[in-house]
Length: 424
Image (cartoon, rainbow, N blue to C red; front, side, top):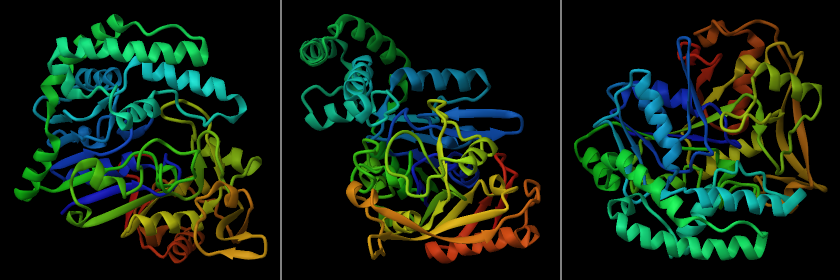
């Protein structure tokens, strides 16, 4: 059976934990989009693992892990992750495979990202400055793109990097009065990347179709969240890739109809990092309580996340466009201690009800949330493993999420550990 796990909010929903759990029954785990701007956290016993590029299934020793074409691959980050896991006893040889067609994030991409954000001032997008956007821009423009497979011919790569450096240097100097790009310095790093990463390089599309023909169970892992999708999210405050379930076929080369079940991951509340519309945001004592109780600080940047109530309108939209079959509701335990809980059940724009999430900045700026209020609970639920043992008020909250999103909640997270999970 093939599954796809995708976030239905603005990222940070807890996908890493769900992928890690489902990987136990999977043969292959596939990362199909995004770059090192993603951060997936998995806790095993007393050990915490923060992954940015390696699929979360890498922590299961018998699972093969694949990074596909559409991932913006930062060679330094993935090398650091490989070395870190190797030092902690994980073997990745003949278990990790990286697409030879994945585009590389190099130093000048990060420089370009930083310079562009600084130039925008108060109008900046709020990127992680990881160079993801500029890398994807080079991919689309084609002429100056560097891919994993280019590391195989170093002399040809050197010539290409000098052409790239000449172009980027003119760009940086004219637009930002910044220093020129040192092509030789970039090339020397690429030589090191080639030595360390080429043993993992292959045609992952061919590999995945081979696994499908063999009847392997494949788990596809999304990065970020649906509301950050470049085409269907809250543009321009989005990521640079198709981070929704819609990105899975294009990113991996595997048709969506070959996936048996799409699982959407959400928090029992909402969070977002950086700038952009956030209709249910609580920039008040409630938001601060959720942030501290849920440890809502970015895995990648450490930035405090903006926090707010669960937005059923946004989640319903994300589930619809991703053809999601069921929902994993995470961080239910974080809400314990709040005397009153709210769920945004609909949007009002002027006198009109917005029946469908308006992924449009002008419309979202006019949204007024219509909330349903329900009582909270004080009980500690972190040790509960049966839905029927949850406080009745917590059960009622879960059921209202199901009713408002029109999707069944089949997994509930009541803590960060593997064991702190309720299956329905």
